[in-house]
Amino acid sequence: DAGVIQSPRHEVTEMGQEVTLRCKPISGHNSLFWYRQTMMRGLELLIYFNNNVPIDDSGMPEDRFSAKMPNASFSTLKIQPSEPRDSAVYFCASSLLENIQYFGAGTRLSVL
Amino acid sequence: AQRVTQPEKLLSVFKGAPVELKCNYSYSGSPELFWYVQYSRQRLQLLLRHISRESIKGFTADLNKGETSFHLKKPFAQEEDSAMYYCALSNFGNEKLTFGTGTRLTIIP
Image (tube, rainbow over all chains, first blue to last red; front, side):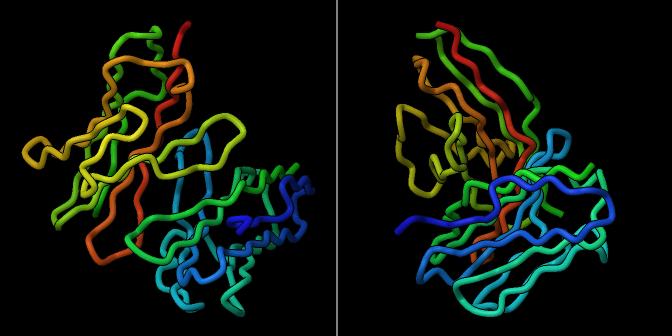
């Protein structure tokens, strides 16, 4: 298995544009997590899904952020409209048992 | 609310010297503690968890409920230990992880 796959690896966009980040979890895993990493705040959980259902979205910063998981093998995190303060590395992780999460390589987002 | 504190953003240690990365937590329930590590150009990955009680790459961590700490230790640092280390907490039976802000460990040759 290639592990958790995220795309794109890098995204540069202008303020106000829509940004969509994609994640493919490890096959067979039933939980998926979206995190944001910044220098100041470290790793913050944005939202997580279990069996494709959003369980906790309390970390989603505001209505500009939305996440979907239409099936067990795909999830998206969308920011619309994007702002410079959204610049960060966004990680996706998946897990099956025992709270052990497997992380993707991340998407580095720069909003100009 | 659960919280994880890693007081050191940066830590530099000479090769061969002991390493201790501090982690304190606040949580009223029954916590499960983890250390995750991110080596240069690699993905964040699990290093160890307190219920396993094992040593990974020479690292150990003991859960001290009295001091609410889960410090990561290694008696003799190696250059390949240079990485970003995150302490994390979850409640047993709950998958949600709360991470600390991380400590960047640099081993000086």
